Image (cartoon, rainbow, N blue to C red; front, side, top):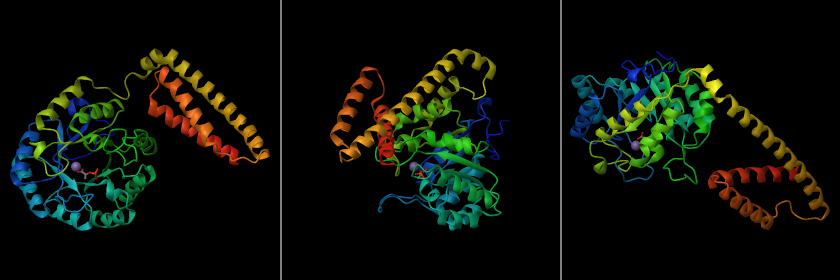
Length: 359
Ligand code: PEP
Ligand code: MN
């Protein structure tokens, strides 16, 4: 068993892939809806836990806010009937206490809670000594330290079984996603906390049904330890997140497709190294060249700074910057480079050039 496998009591080793698959509706809406979803998911051997929202954090007031305690009662009854385990979001210490009362042993902290250290401390107080499994969604903002801080606080409260969930970030420009994935942030978390399992929540990243499978695929290609996916028997009628929930049938189909394109992170390291050696050499050479060019560019910026100072003109010259941006974007486009990527790189280089000229 991989050390990264989440240590849930019933965690299923997904076709020896050591993946943790969590699926279920965004919210519990009725006993019937929960029963129908549970029956479908209980038939999927890959699914080790059923997720469902009992208290819903709504961005604006007036929407469906979850059913609270009655939902927990149905979860307890259906868990006994179908031999499944449920998990739900907790956002207050009282939620933890109610979950314990109804035999829920896995909970998650939502994105809005992870970003709030005061609330995390309060929830830690309720979790201490409970032996619960805790999943921690990333905070809304792309701040890896806030995410790590919540994990550290839970660890300090004696929670041993922790798992992170990447659900994307709120950005001004989400590049077509509901929450920008910014894959580099969970990869930093992976580097900083190598033993922490990380699952991907493609539903909240994508925000649309047709993006769920490709995002899940990307997560598997990046070596994530599993998925949390929103599944509803009738997504169009869902009371929350109806655009992004998929049916149990689509979920089963997706898991089959993922299995057929399964990759391992370890692979055969030696054979992989040999096969990639010539290409990696070229990448190394290009990176060294790029860094050399950047250093040369910054030296020229220093000379420009001196001239601007002598001529008493401002460091930032909007007209010139506009021309540079346009010219480089045209070249980038003719070279087949991604427009957003190019713009981001150019803006970073320009910002550094301005910083150099100010120092
Ligand atoms: C959810 O899982 O339904 C939810 C509200 O998640 P998040 O905290 O990621 O927005
Ligand atoms: Mn949701």
